[in-house]
Length: 177
Image (cartoon, rainbow, N blue to C red; front, side, top):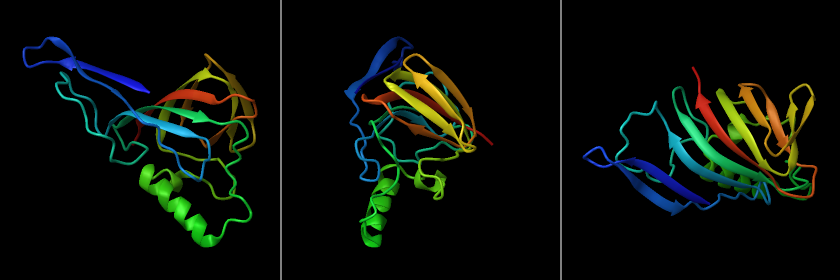
């Protein structure tokens, strides 16, 4: 996925700081899903921006004052439940992979409700394509399609795709106190 970052040069003129492709992150625990970590800040932004940031190395979810911007694609039928025949050691390995690639993500999931997670963030989500659903911790399902927007305020939720095409959405996560 292409990312173009605009900013300023030392004279204050607008310039392209970066024009590059961002590779998707995939993890064995979520087969077929992709995550693009497009831009991440661990504190409030300061202008002017004169340099591009390095590849993300911090936690997947931001702390207070931090921001995350990216894209997630959920394949049809993703259940979040590991296959019954996965050994404990194999499960440890896929969880370790997820923690390495998306630090802190696994800690937000509820082990008793597959796919459900809660983060201390305000999330702004825009569905780009496909159809999916947002499930709440009390079992409410909200059908979503391209163009729909969701504002999550630290509530437990899970993203599901019962359709036949990838369910793709952009997100901005704002860390809270």
